[in-house]
Image 1 (tube, one colour):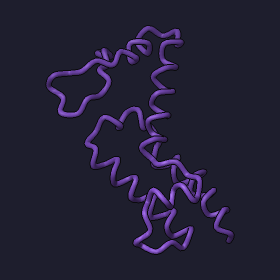
Image 2: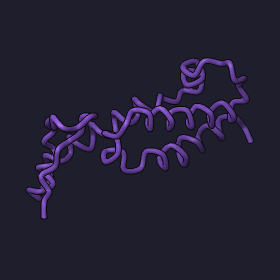
Image 3: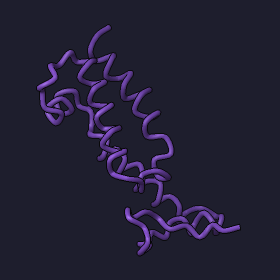
Image 4: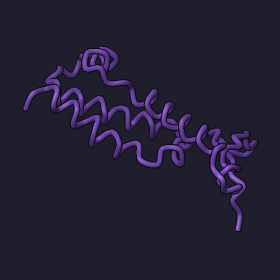
Length: 114
């Protein structure tokens, strides 16, 4: 299988699986995001046949694949920007991103209570 086809398979199948529901879990410990970044880099390294000592940034640049943190940031920004346009008032409240003083890691505060 050609290398470019392997890279496309990673970006079309594996990365969406890793980033599924990212606005929900993106406020978790930064270590989880680093683990996902390592998995993506490992898959790219295998697809390209790159040695283990090759820099991750160079690998991503050479294969034209953006880093996972940048991709997650874009997904989350698009998600929260789109919430203001929804008709449901509860969903619009999700767009309110304010800091909770008791949270160790900042995340959106929701007002969805039953």
